[in-house]
Length: 274
Image 1: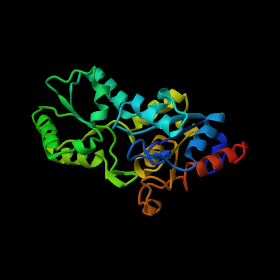
Image 2 (image 1 turned 120 degrees about the vertical axis):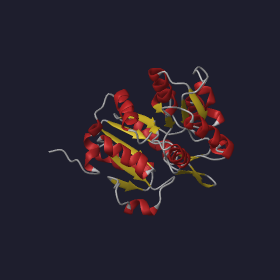
Image 3 (image 1 turned 90 degrees about the vertical axis):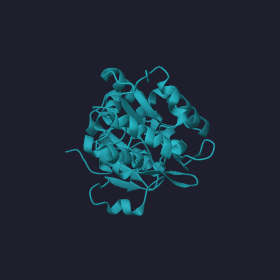
Image 4 (image 1 turned 30 degrees about the vertical axis):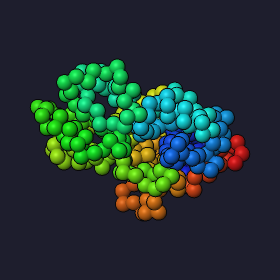
């Protein structure tokens, strides 16, 4: 009978999904900084027989610019391996005939160049950073409150994330403000949305029980993956807090020091050396 617990489950894995910020690198001034051991850990996973994808709620740059930044940091990553929320959101807009009002970071705007934004009938909110001004939030509120059937899309729902100079508020905080003001429930595109995780699994050609998610966000990375049927491992880097290991509702399948440690365990269990 197959071992379904950690670390024995690594023997039957067919794929690994990695979060990016807080697992591979910490964002900040310039390109940010790679977390020690993470560049080599990604290289080792790529050299193994495991499928590898990167699942991120990054919404401060286009996918191409974001991947170029990771490559400058030293990571062997291609655009086709990275799954951020914006492309998935554009597909939803086309499918439902929606025209968005955007409250996003300036770096993400080019993703929506080909999207009709006249007379908006929905609002998209992402990690807008300094664009989260009262004026901009109020403008998004006015669009929503003026619609007969308001639709709010949130590119993720994180509470905060870590940059090199400390923790920063994430999009979920502002999403909740608009939900409260407009008495509605946002549609989340990105982690922890089951649809978002399933799109990554489909690209890998794997069932949930064949894949493992590694992230620094207990609720959105680990909890979201577990809800879909995957195993979820949390790293003690990025936004990790010791209190995560005493969370009342989400319990990681394992908590490890960093990505390099996780890869040591995975490959060691698979007989490929630690």
